Length: 360
Image (cartoon, rainbow, N blue to C red):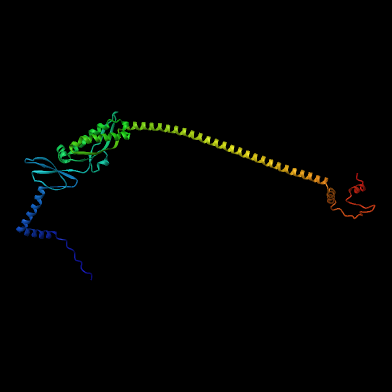
């Protein structure tokens, strides 16, 4: 058999409340509980009503409502817990860190944690409207002077900073014409002049201006179209000037290249001429030396012939003639002939041989 399933009962909150209420009623009947409760309330309420806490990056200015010293006191209170008489004194808090007022209509800037103000509308010296997004960065150097001039809270933004910054920026940047807004150095120079004027104007009130930053400027639509068309024309003129300069430089380059090619051709021809000249000189030198060699050979041959003739004409010529005859008769069949007697033949006796052979 399967075990029986017992349903789970819901939790009874009413019973718990009843038990707690019964315990509280019993405790409230005790005098000790009332004494401890009253002491705790006094320990919390009395210090809270007689002291004020100044958080970091804040400064306190004390204001007295009654008595001989009634008014705003010049003493400044730094971060910490300070004793204040409840009902007769009050400590007003002012920021000590950098503060920013953002003059802008951009939806992106609206989301940031800065004090926002409408963008600054400026009319240029030539009559066109320009919308500026500007950031003013400052700090409160003397909260006492700020309180005296603007009052408590953040009223110094609406009474001191915003109207003065708007007026000074309109006046200073309004001295530029529409074209000069495109020129960064002039616009930056005027922004710095506006910063110096705003710093000098709010310094007596205990405020120190750190920077005035002109971030964005927007022209009205008609002038925007006009200036864009003018810039396009200017860019077209610059393009044509650049093209003309490029054409001049191209012609210069072509001239230099042609002159270089001509110089190279001239040098090549000169080199070829020098080579031909050297070849002609070498050929002349070769023929000259060959002629001198042939002359020496012929002179040697002539000298040898002369010496040979002289040898033939001198002593022993008969022997030489005989040797020549022997050379001439080389290969001839040898016949032995008698050399004495009547019919004897002496081969060395040329006269006898010439008579016998009837050589005249």
